[in-house]
Structure formats: structure tokens, C-alpha cells
Length: 72
Image (tube, rainbow, N blue to C red; front, side, top):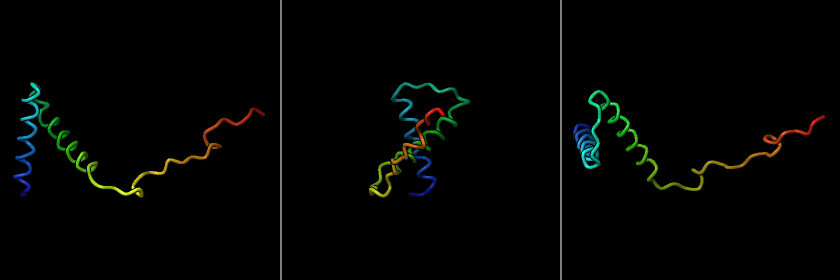
């Protein structure tokens, strides 16, 4: 799919979603909201890809670094 086709497809999807949900957007904000929509679509595409356990961030911590030390 060419860039122009993709842009037209995204614009059509954006307009269809706003119309379907009955949204009336202020004309001066439509382009900014559309840019956010395109960015959100890119993020969701990234979330929907296969990942291995190595992609999971480590969830470890050292308790001594987060507890208060005893008063002297």
C-alpha cells in the first residue's frame, strides 16, 4: 500500500469513527486530533505483535533502596 493510499485510508477511518460515535470536533482541532489518532494506531499495532519473555522488563528491586533507614 502506498503512503498516499495509507493516509487516505487512515483519514477515512478517522472520519468514519468520529461520525459513527456522533462526535462533532472543533474545526481548528481536527488536524491535531487526527494526528493523535494516527499515533495511537501506530502504538496499538506495536502492542499487537508477538513478544518473548525477554521483552518483559525486569520487575526486581532491592528493598534497602526503598525503605527508610532506622533513626540514629
